Length: 135
Image (cartoon, rainbow, N blue to C red):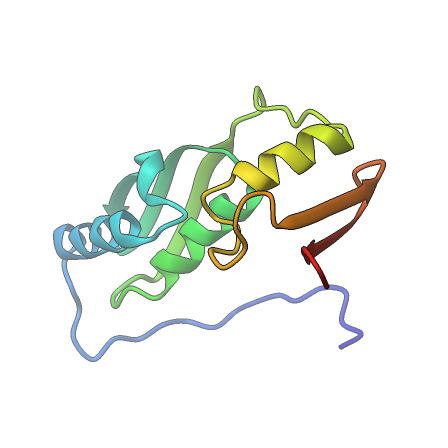
């Protein structure tokens, strides 16, 4: 807490060294199993235990997540994250009526609240009250 800059001079020493091919295989497998990254088809290249990540994702969170996943792979000494965040994606604000409609028709909403039994009210898309009918 309070630090504004960190210079990391730690070096990783392995008991047994994995080859680049095995590190790449494990990294690809881990990324393919990660629910945030799997759909993006991130490319993995490994040279001298340094993992190079390339591709395009939708958010900075996904870019960071890819690096986090690969950092846990045995044998990885360094990561060069060259993943780009897709800039063509744009979030469009929705009015309260559209948000209410989307919520009530969403397959992710509470399965115990039947359609028509929930009251969803909001104010300019910023604060919502969602309650089961009769509460």
